[in-house]
Length: 229
Image (cartoon, rainbow, N blue to C red; front, side, top):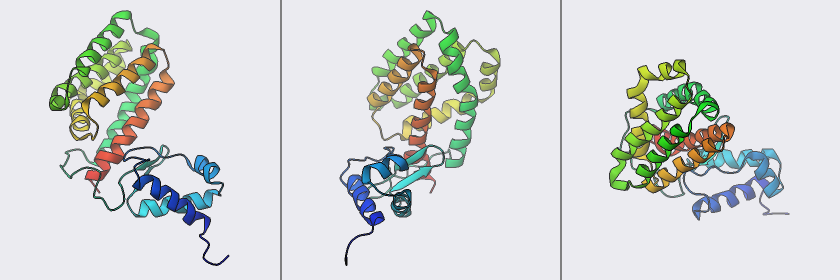
């Protein structure tokens, strides 16, 4: 029929409206290609074409192996002001790869070896995090670092602990920059740590690692990749 939109155009328009209306907010992970195919009853080719147009407009960023995320809204500037960060996009990803090698294994061991005292230490830190406000980002960053280091020590593996020790200052700086530049209010950051604690306490290491993976992908898209485009 003359004037009828191609299927990829229809998918693009639907996705654009969801981003423009804020249904999909900046930093949100959008459904996978297979989920979009099912939702719109279209082929993968149509979905990929729509995604490529959104990527070309700077509205969507795709992280290989993780998924696609909303990076901006139409007619708006970058997700956050270009405040500047001493951590480049490439350095952020490289350090997170190091974290995966060390901290993800520590999570697996934490759920096996952690004591009641280890869990109480994390709960104490969570209470102090929850008491922080947006004006306390520096204090929150210090508690954030202590929280993750407690997980590492709870693994009871001296080699994993030793692997991180030479990079302790880099790790602290990495977390400080995330908190400083995050578009999320501090109470939301505290709630994220509550969720990570719950997964650890319930001995769900796979879910805990997936949570951290998704969280760091969010910051790569909304903070570091934006600052270094």
